[in-house]
Length: 104
Image (cartoon, rainbow, N blue to C red; front, top):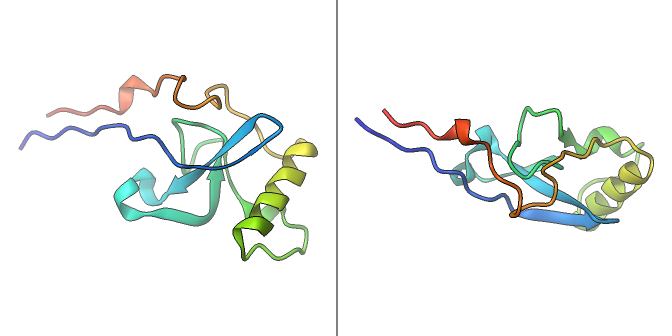
C-alpha cells in the first residue's frame, strides 16, 4: 500500500538569546504527542539526534516539573554552553531534510 511521510514543523517551546528550543515527539511522530522532558535545538531533527536533550539531565538538582522551571533550566544550560545548537535552529526558514519522505 502506498504511503507518504510528511514533515510537520515542531512546536517551539522557548527562545533564549535568539536560540529556538523545540519539543521532541515520541518516535518523531506528532500524532503520538510531545515528550514531557525532551527537547531539541534542531528544527528538523528530533528524538535521537545530537541536538536533543533531556532537561532533567541539566537541572543540577532543581525541579523540572513546570514549563517555567524547564525554561529556566534550558536558559541556564544554553548560557553555560551545555546544549549544542543545530544549524537549522532558525526554524521554518530552514529546509527540512528531504530524505524523510518515503513513498512506496
